[in-house]
Amino acid sequence: MKTIESSIHLGEIIPNISILLQRNAELWKDHNVFTEYKNGTYVSIKWKDFYKDIQNIASNLKNQGFKEGDKMIIFSPNKLEMLELELAVMSMKGIVVPLFAYFHQETAELLIKHSGANFAAIDNEIQWNRIKYLNLELVISFNPSIEMARNTLPFVELLKSSANDSASLTIEIDSDFICLNMYTSGTMGTPKCVQLSHRNILSQQAALIKMWNIDHTDRFLSYLPWHHSFGGIFELFTALSNGAEMILESSYGKDPTVIMQHWKNKKPTLFFSVPKVYQALYELAKKSKETEEIFFHSNLKFIFTAAASLPQTLSDEFERRNIPVIEGWGLTETSPCCTLTDPSKKRKPGVVGFPIPGVQIAFAPDGEILVKGPNVMKAYYNNAEANRGIFTEDGWFRTGDIGEYTENGLKLITRKDRIFKLSNGEKVIPSDLEKLIEVQCPYVLHALIAGEGEEYPVALLFPNKKLLDDPDYFVTLDDGCFCPRSLEELSRCLKGCLHDANCSIGQKFSKIQSAVIIDDELSFDNGTLTSSMKASPKNILQVYKAQLKTLYTPESNAEDVVYIIRLDDLNKIPGRKINVDYV
Image 1 (cartoon, rainbow, N blue to C red):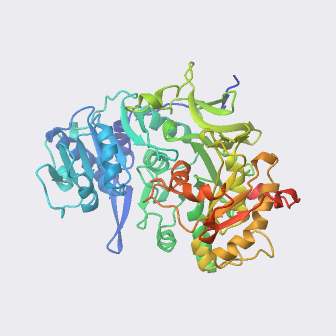
Image 2: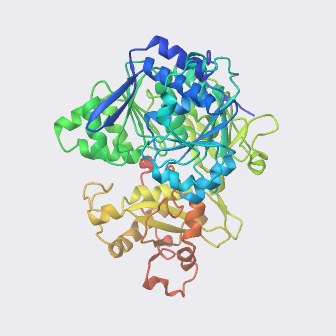
Image 3: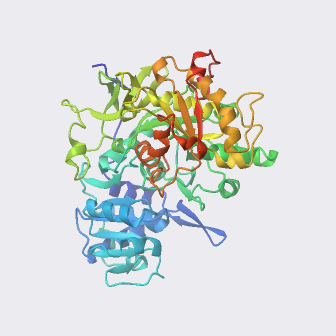
């Protein structure tokens, strides 16, 4: 089996997070580590005070009965208190278990029970009302106004000076000791609990320091949630390890105008985000020359994009101004980064770069990407079924992603569990056509191809309702594209776009024969979006199974209430191939 790895030597890995914090407090004691926007002003904390808080928290937690190996649920949005508590727990040989702050009660209770945690921290009444009936030893409240119960403690009590605070952190922690149990986003079902060690997390930083020029003068404008690996491991520890300042974005990535205002005020030198947010910020930047100059300012070292490829047109805007666009690939199970693109090379669609130092990549016979390295988890917590076969006999982690290696780096093809078989046995890779449809028509926000066990594939289409309400005649990729203003108009004009997308797929059996436009939006509430805002194909097919059924039942009266597009006759007509450089 061919192994692919970086030619750069990994170098020394900091043994544990306690040593990292101790080092930083000595090196950058008077430098800001974290900044929040509160009551109309920016409030910062310096490394010396930050480290003192962490020592106090650890000491007072011990007095509350928290001991080595105990687990602390952190059920809160990003904030200073959450960060300090998380690092204190890790540095006293505890295990942090972050949860999405707005999980419904049923999900929160399920994961907390599964986690085996006896301690929890919450932000406000929303989280308290969802866990207050659980039998927890102690619940810490970041908000002192919450009505106290017998087993609750205000976080401010943990900040009080203690006689033993200077010896509260455990410096001699084995690097393989578990410090973080992080739940996956659950795109294909129930979230799994990934067990990560100090070495897993800090090996990433030993690799990145060889590749990036980041130091204590840098500023991150940060909104990515810490319950998810992209924000809570990759971005967070990149900032912490280099002593850079993290500036918490107060809208949590939801309001582009607020993000842009913070951008103007703080001029971040680094920004980690997803394509949707970059696109929204760029649209704002174009409104004035001043805003455009501030957004693309000269001290912006690079931007990092994940979750999906940045549209080529937007990528070109950054590169035209000599601001590198970096993309990567990995999973929570790999802490998370495995590959990074080389900013000196022209970006290619679907290509996510080369292995970082210390990480090895190989391929199973079916194309599944296999990974080895100090970043790979030990196992899933309390999940024998998920652990069964997750590693090969010779120790390679099975990622579940299908890909191939090219001269430009690793190219992702699809998730293994997204491939389905038709009734004739042919295998369909749905992601290719899904991307083509979404690229071809910006009025389609999500496309999902299905057809397991059926004669042919079909598509569920979810419209971009904001664009339908306010059509943008400059957003389309093709001159002369008709900009619909309703679902009825969209159903008429989509026929040609879907036909062209079909014609760009080589295998005849992979072409869709019909599609349905669903007058609804994917959401966290019905499980069609995960806590990291990714589409959940398994849940989408379950929630919209009735609409899916209409596509295989021609005599159905469903066309009276939904918009169905039939393509079987059009498939025989040659069409225009789509420029896949936009995928």
